[in-house]
Image (cartoon, rainbow, N blue to C red; front, side):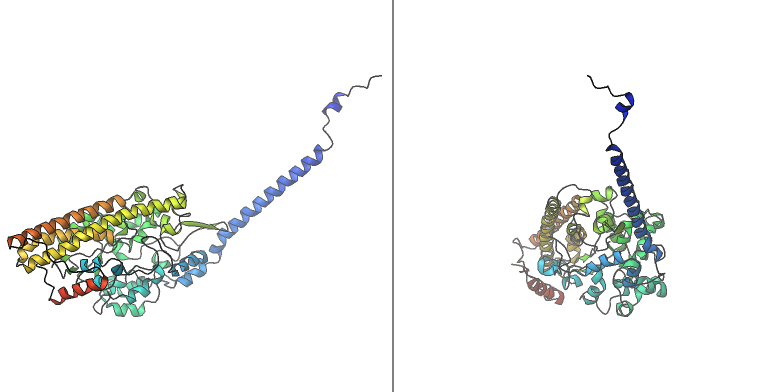
Length: 471
């Protein structure tokens, strides 16, 4: 007897376990969607919550802690700038005495304040403390020297007027400055938009025929840094000016100074009228590949971070090598060690070029001094001094910049190569002057191998009783 065959309806009927499984799957999907929706709502709430508790800030609120009440994440990262133990191969926040590390600098700036005191900046948090401690500030220093050191500056400029602020003695300005570089130097307290608070940058853009108020947001993320990290000079001894009317490249700035017949000091050894470059980080970086690719200063030195669904800018301004994962590695998909090694290799090559330029410049100063001791007149020395003036400015624009040339390594190496060539030309010209006066052997170069020895030699030239350089 055969079993009856199943009917068509029996064949279409699903197994009994399918129904419960489907119910569980639907419930699981619903649960996951619910959790996802809750997470999205929570993240949106976290992102919106700060703006819902903001307290109004005065137009020129200088206290960074007050800003921190509204923007705690930014303020907490800013406070990390108090650290003074970070170190990279050529930078970091560890205090360094550049004159001890490189005594040649004493001779290169002989007769100027930098030959007495030149230390690595410890960061924005210490900007006010460090400027009050430096030996380069004297009773004759103008208020201009405080321009980039305190968030109190915009308030004081608004009250006194820009020109009057610059002309006020530094000591008087310092009595009213209580807060280091911080929030309102770069941000509008009402909108938090980036803004320019230092008039010298605005005036420099106008001199180039540009309206800085038309700058895009990405450009502003560099321009707020360019308020201070630039080359500048004091016109009429007090008024702050950026020498950009001919362009941002180093030769254009030097041409500007030549046209103005400007000099910061006369070198005590060679008698050369020199321009002391400051820290043209912005100008030098414009020649680099990162600027070409529209990478802003903040992209590398203040990278974005995410916390609890909130994206914000890290205000611990520091070397990208101290935060490779959030700065360099965002674009460069290599290991942190590979990135760091690549950067340090480039910087080391720039440093080698800088060393060669410094060696040539130091000798050039002494060669010209020897020619003067041999009886060469100022008219005879004008040629080699002119070469030294150009060479030292090119060298100084790289040496005084942060990053050991990495912002634009090809441009930095070019400038240092030119500086070395010009210094050697000055030495040849001085040697010809010596030969014309019967001196055919090199001068006796003083021992400047340490800061103390170099400062002692410099002091002799400053006093007017220099050591004998002729054999």
